[in-house]
Length: 243
Image (spheres, rainbow, N blue to C red):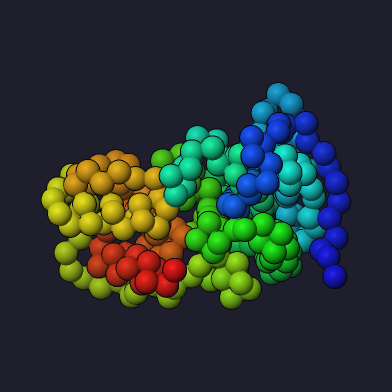
């Protein structure tokens, strides 16, 4: 049985350059005071932003842009060497106040709807698990959504995306802003190998810190600080071994 979806058309879309190629799914939070405020913005031609779907807190799902069209949700972003994320992806906005409004939990009824919607989307398109991503994964220096409290493990259990159990946090050496050398290069190589937009420079620069923070938000949410500690590095290796 298909998930019931209501139409709330947004004018903010254009044509995909390759209509048949949809292979990335991006999850966002709305990050506004209310769902209606967010939906109004996503449907306002002045805002020049949109998404394909919105999932409200009560589990209702709205379709703003047809999947065959290019919604404007990703902005300046990259994943797995792709820079036109809007052209290759489907975007889901999940109503949640986000970091600016107290990081509220995602209600169970909303998460059930997110699961069902994602399952339907990945059944229609060649979206591999590692290409189910957070907005923070594709734009780590600009975005933090859907936040470290979003339940990626639950989605993975439903067959959507990738999850490995994070390695526990322990003491020991870390890689941090300003560090240089082969260990930094190896970290950058592994992050890029998974899909993050990062160059292997051997310097732990601001971009690397942002990417590490994005990785932690998604895969090691207990501590999100941009420092590559033993837990972060070991979790990243487990993740790479799993895909």
